[in-house]
Image (cartoon, rainbow, N blue to C red; front, side):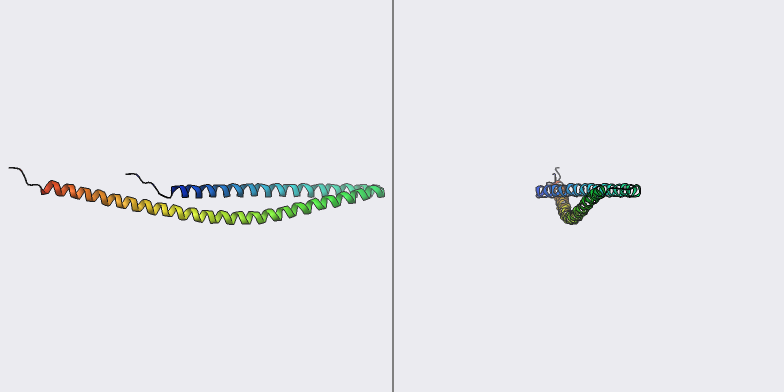
Length: 148
């Protein structure tokens, strides 16, 4: 006799759900890393721009060029803020997805425990059945009169 769990399909679906959530977690982590890299790129760009502006100010700069630097600095500042907002929302999404992963993991463990309980019960019943058959066989064998 082999063990067939009657809720195996449900267990399989729960495993697939957990894998999907794990995939989503890794995608969100990757998005957070990309957002952080983008922010660092814009910060680096802003630092270079400020250094270049200071250097030109020391050498003498036209007002139009100074205005251009200010516009560019404003644009880069907006990009940095945009990256920070994106990181904030991604962090919120990560919290939500991690909570969902925890819930699916707990549910998966519950179903695994139910399966193990059912398997243990099955094995116990199979052992009892084997013992009963063995007892009946030995009773029949030893209960028969001995031929003379």
